[in-house]
Length: 172
Image 1 (spheres, rainbow, N blue to C red):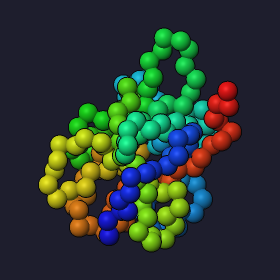
Image 2: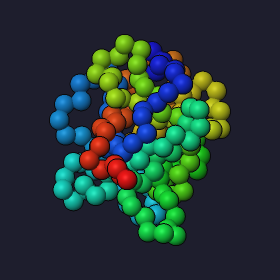
Image 3: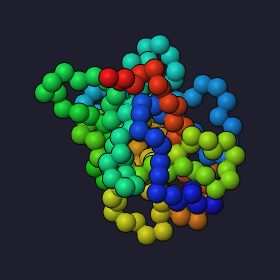
Image 4: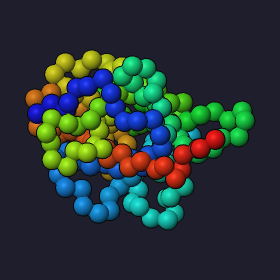
């Protein structure tokens, strides 16, 4: 089953991004995309107080069907914006905290169970691996590029639950 292909994704805003398996009940807990240092691989971490300040991501529309996934912290003037950055579309290539690149973010959809606010994140421009779906997933707690055969079931694709954080959004 292919993910729903529509020209929209999540609303712009601040979110926690939780790694999930499509079509399965998420339960409690989970691992969330968590910032580290500039230029290093983005990691996942459990929902614990020591990670609270490093789990918020700002989703910003970049184009008609693309988004930036930016570090949502407040920056002092002159500091470079950071976010999800991929350097290649090969399997297990790390996703870095660096100058944000464009990604497509599409809802799982297609009548999948537990699909509300669940999205598949893909690099916007990929090396075009024939017969492969290129997605953003997790390998050993690090966020990486994952390649999945196009005909594989939906559950084989990494997905992300987007938990909106209105309390962290700038109201000015």
